[in-house]
Amino acid sequence: MKDDLAAPERASDDLFATLYDELHRIARREVARSGTDGVASPTTLLHEAYLDMAGRGSLAFPDRLCFLAYAGRAMRARIIDQVRARGAVKRGGGLHITALDTEVAEDAAEPQQLSAIGAALDELAEL
Image 1 (cartoon, rainbow, N blue to C red):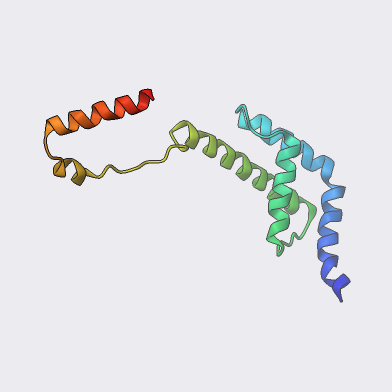
Image 2 (image 1 turned 180 degrees about the vertical axis):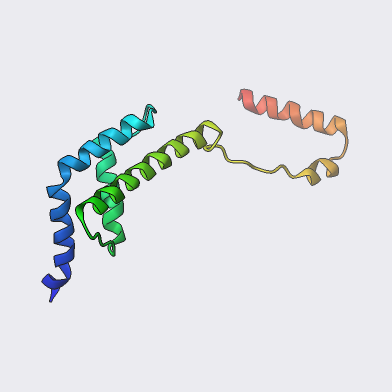
């Protein structure tokens, strides 16, 4: 019974192995078409797209061309995700925004006391 459930997965793996060279050519084309540096290598792109497709499990393709077209779209989506992630980091995606509590400043006693606290913090930093 367990072998019956694995048959579709084996068929998908066999299809992938049979079409590997063609899929690799598509991956090279997609990387070249993206025109961006730092995008994954064609082999990495192909394998990531395959893992994405394999994780979906319920995919069925009526013919070879439909499978290749879907694989090409999956590769383009991976490239877009990589470019967006890199762009987000450039725009401060790695920063953590924190809010300052304005009530603390309102409750502060006097400017001289704040000045003394600042001097104490400077001394502490030197230590």
